[in-house]
Image 1 (cartoon, helix red, strand yellow):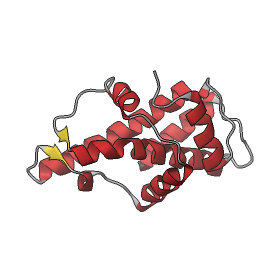
Image 2: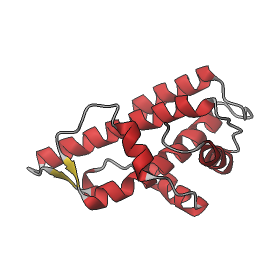
Image 3: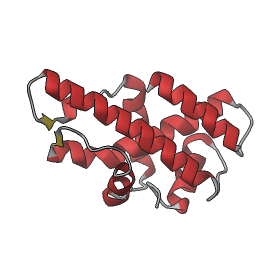
Image 4: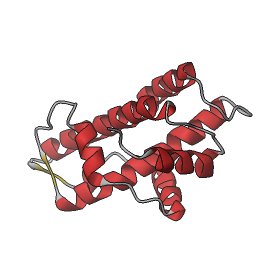
Length: 149
């Protein structure tokens, strides 16, 4: 399973960055997005712990200005993502020590959508003119994401 369907992935990448992706790209991309999401949730968990809370509130999420803009862009595309699919992917990672508040949990699909827009646009910036990603391209974008997200 992946965080989104092939058609959702195709539409998001095409609309966000004019990328032509296919089903072979989705598992690598899904792993990348899930890894970045998990790291964001770990940072949110640390924030909640620092504030003496057992519950991760939306304000604990380390959302940068750029990621917020990508989330807004994702919302305009009107391609809803399924929370259960995303949570199934997150289950491959170790469990968090804190609980996600209902409002925080409700933001997870938007986070994945925003991360998808961000990563697709990062690809377009790193490889201008290339519309068909290669495996090594996704690996490089993943390395950049690990540095900045």
